[in-house]
Image (tube, rainbow, N blue to C red; front, side, top):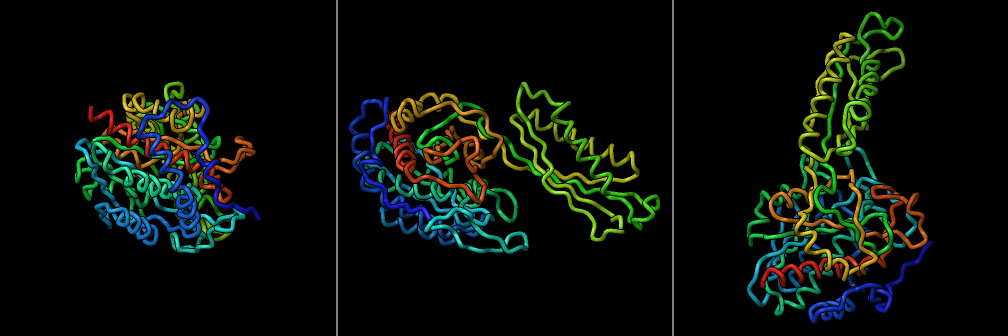
Length: 433
């Protein structure tokens, strides 16, 4: 079993190569960072050991709310479900910036051998499952709790207001949609009115490296469900019915040609994946129906509309050719995560100072999706990635987010706290000029 003691302050706060000369506020940030990091590690381990599924983040929300209240903030709970919002009003007038972390875990049984590994069990879609922070949201919550403590200690110097958004159900609410939309509907962007927002996501990248991308960054995500209606018959007499399994199989193959033969992927990448194929109950019965479920990933509204049309047409025409019929349903999903180009360029020096110039790199397009996109649809936003793989990990084979073997090295946490704190400080300082 690996052991993960609290890391030494000297290691946590080592000055990165190529870092810019710190401003007085940055120097104070570093001093406060040293004091908060042991707490950040402890919070992360506690949250990791007690994950909660989307829409059920009761314990995590309580932990966050108690911490923010202890810091003297205005705190709202139950925002968009179990969302928590903390408002830190600075000692000087200015604009308002928001920092966001998501809190939910996944229906994944952890296989990482940690002293604080999750043993939580829950019910998901009617099945008993393990629960794990397999996407690293435990790190996000701990990082933002640490950021809140750092900035609360600098309250008198803040030229404006910082809103801390702890969001439920980023992985999708059981009743549909995501937590961001629900929090927005509950007024999270309006009281106080937020002018810009920043978010961070850990991933299986180089330890302590920050990656970013201006413009479209993460894909729009849409789930689809295709129900093939055939006609049930005996398996020994297939001509006596219409086989929805054969029709469904032809639809699966037809869907593959939408990307490989019909979409200009030199303009934007796109994905159509079939993730489920359910049909039948017995070896000698051709069933009445089959169900295909999958995901569509795109990077522009035009491309999305075109692929939606092709999925519908492909399924319908293949079914009709065999005498079957289909119902095709595509949900509204998540929109493209799009970093504001001007904001990204403006904050790049801040990221380089937080992680080191050589440790900030341009990210490729990511076909994963994020409902942080809905905050960005309201105000300029920047969403960055923080590498958390161990230094000796092979980045080509290391388990990625959503894997039961996903592992986050705690030595990346101080970079996350410093980056989020510095983004808020620098944006407020620049906006007050």
